[in-house]
Length: 501
Image (cartoon, rainbow, N blue to C red; front, side, top):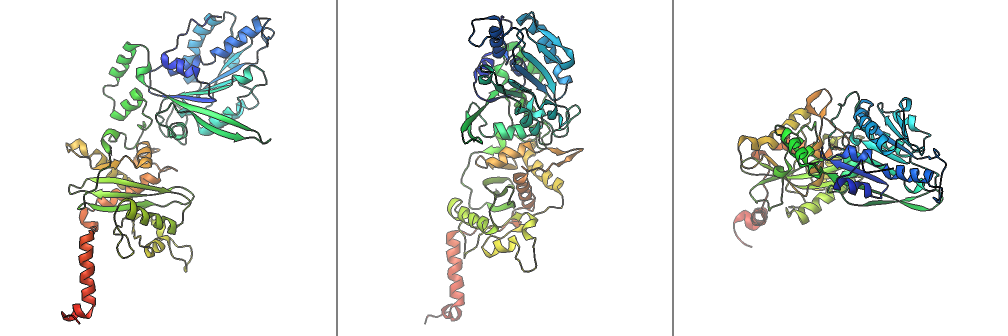
């Protein structure tokens, strides 16, 4: 059995060599991810061929007795056709005895090793793979699958064979883009689940992740996985690379970033995709000038995440998000205490007379009361020195358009964008470019479990649209000392009568 019909690229060699339980090869279009995935079972195929042709092999098998079984999946059957065509050309060169079972979309090699092509069109189609034992799973374009489909089918990776049980692999390839509510004839409920699960923990990739699993018998096993980034530059053919990049000459910037460089944060279908540019909008921190107006915003969360953002508005109406605080499972009092600590100790915006100098918009549920005698969270936080105004929630579309306007402000020739974000605001930077449009309503941003940072930003931009006059000024230490002295003198007999006792 010869493997000379396939020569992997350097990127492909690295992918094939990774020994981990799960590997995601993902990023740019063009580096040959599908071809690499097609040949990922090659080692198992060759081992099983040797076991069934070499009687001296320590784990020899009769011809046709292999239990090896590869499953290559796409979301729909039509998406498999090109890969199946390639397999029809290549597999007979690898093994002249291979035969095709069209009823089950399966190649059966001389050893008995099966290579099946399957799909998971409907959300519940994972159920048809229950009861099978696959020795390698391959998900092509993982972003098109539901997370439950991936998790359920992954439980079918198992073998009792003494050789194959040590060679089990779960593999996937994917481009970053999946648009909410689109596809050929299917939807994906969360188009960013692959990114959140496998890319966010280490966006640069090539990082080994380990998780210790305690089994029911008390023993422990370690699950390992890695994200291996791919770029167009990983394709071995320079003419292909040049032609591909040339064909993208008129594509929007975020599409180019996704398809050339594998940018998982430049989402196709992104509400802000046409205006978001991380090279422009994400900036290094700097000291906020004292004359700039400063305020904060908050989207509340308890079981889900909540967040607070701090903003500065300059004299030209440019808005800077300069600090982010994310919380979950904290009470209103605990959040107020955290805000006090951040403003006093981190941001160096000292509180005056037990109260913050800042205010800003917060989620309106902060003022909801459970009972008549129970203070709302907004009232509780106000007694602790953290004052808020009710966020404008009349129109999410209007608020989102204000964010959009500020992000795109640089297109009019201005030097500074109308909205920039300090690089330390990692959750906002991560989630903002992934915001999708509502199904059937491209003017409205969708809301999902990752929307909290976006909601807070919309509150902040709507608040800033009033202009600097609507934002209270901070009081410097010197001004505060003078004001306090004047207030004390006014309230004392000496101050009242203009003489000293």
